[in-house]
Image 1: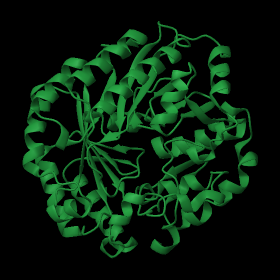
Image 2: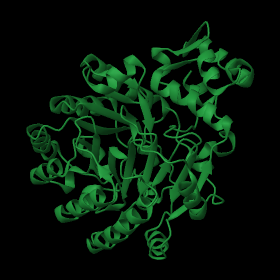
Image 3: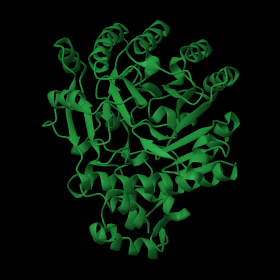
Length: 449
């Protein structure tokens, strides 16, 4: 089973994945699309990419700029404000921002004045929302903030925090150049609780150098003491050919597939025994959390920021490399600060590449997202919504599920395909059956275990 399913594959934060974006869909195509689409006052999601980090974490595969020069952030914010103005021309001010996410890099690289300025500029150009149901979140590197910053973030309107923990073991932290002891994180959690953030999540990584089931149990014990509302446990993808920082990691220190599976089982057993609900795709939440309720009632959703309950029909991305998505289009900004700034200075949207989805793309995206978010789909109901006979249109794909059913990853009940508890571990593999774009680029993805 391990050898059979431990293959490279996407995490499906989108379908098709960003590898299929093409430069034939450029800034002019994006501008035309935004200008000519039907008017709407539907809610909107915003993503803001802050690419800066003060230090490099060796495991990282994000689009980042490592610098201690804070003036680069000021220059970046100037261009970001101009990009907002260019994009806001195509957004009806009646559209409420129900979801806002600052990612990176390290958004908390910005000082208090920078974060205040950025939120103010967003409010000038878009209709921010103060409703309790909103999801306004920010990714935090605990090494870059203090309890005063936590208070500021609450005052700026954030109601969700995501802390990059990765691992609490000192040897593991040294191996990936990210040293942040438990004593640094604990007061931040206390401050976040005292300011009544709606949700606090931790990001962990398994498969890092020098990790073992023993060190993972100790990390999880500390995590449980802090009791976050959500926990994301990502599989480390060792791809040194793609990410130069990973060349600083000794590959002999990286757990093999069997050891990684042991780490994952330790995580699942420990967190489930502690009362967390395993949502799928390495995500765990407390039973009363809205993600657990959404999983139960079939309303869970997913985009580039992960699982959600309040996704808007459109996500617009701001900043270097940020991705926008609508019902039938993906679009990604330029990936370097200089090129991104130059395009904005010329008065043009900084889009570089994208993709217009075909009817087949939309159908397969629907199936894949149902598998990830609802752990199953109904063949007749899904086909009916897309105006096709799914048994005929995806007949070969449905037939390829038979070995997975025999292996206990899923079961078919009438017209419904359901992922089993075992299958949740390998839901990416199940999704890959329906991915028409996969084969040529597979080696550029992380392995599924």
